[in-house]
Image 1 (tube, rainbow, N blue to C red):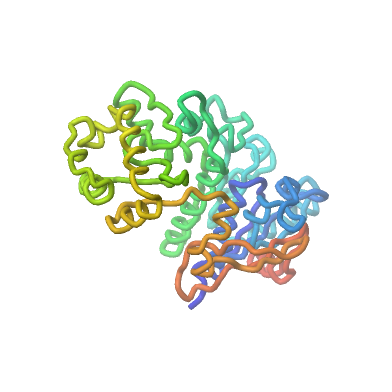
Image 2 (cartoon, helix red, strand yellow):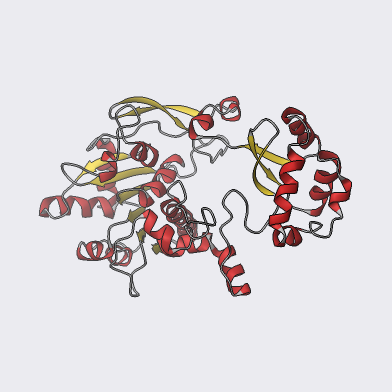
Length: 382
């Protein structure tokens, strides 16, 4: 069987994370991605760091499997070449600032006017209208605007989420929108104009606590180590000081936790703690009881009880511990990847579609591309 997107050609004018993350997934699914980069430095994410054998960790993460083609879109000859490439592409994506994209004629609707059958996608911080359209927008700025920071951290202070959640959210909505548009085009021949706002994408991800806040007329308190609306669902110590995350999602699990794990059946019927809402309402009283119960037996015995009772728990891993995770290694989730500066292992894409081929394990150097891909694009556009 072929890869799901075998034969699909993507042209991108992208930088940083949001659009590159979307096109990386398209490449993992079998599309051929031609990344257009500016002369000299290319995508500025190339220079974020040198952590992965001399290459940027962010660039390696976002650009595996692509080809890099250098063009100066302000140069007449290069611009003419770019238009020839666009004419043969199935998908175009960009995440330039809206004003810059408009001046360059690269907004999704502008590209569709020239190439009606193309699927054109633009990602911006705030969308193409409204009072914030022209404001600069990076991941942390959108985390703040979309309420993610106010939901994260301790009672004393908010905190950023420790990875690029706004970029990832918009990149994944870019991926899903493009896949949906490709499906429709297969049936109808129609192209598509897709304009995504990072704010709107992340606002969708923070929607549940937003709905709850609007319904109650009050913002939720930051809960730090635990879930703000479900308990027990958070990080707590065992008798030996090790911390685990424990999660109880329903009344059956609560009964099993009290009876089989803590061996305190009377706790299950305590009116202060008998329901999830009661435990959240009385969290200041409940957490000392929970901590004492988890420490009431040797750590290994407590873990055995949790396992036997089918209560969800997990280790609180660092990134280094995750890299050594026995489950990832048992499932062979790593792939050797060629970099512009050497060779390193990266994680395999998580799609796991059978008989669909694997990721192209190569991160391109600036201007490194397959001439046959460029020739095919030009031929298709004639």
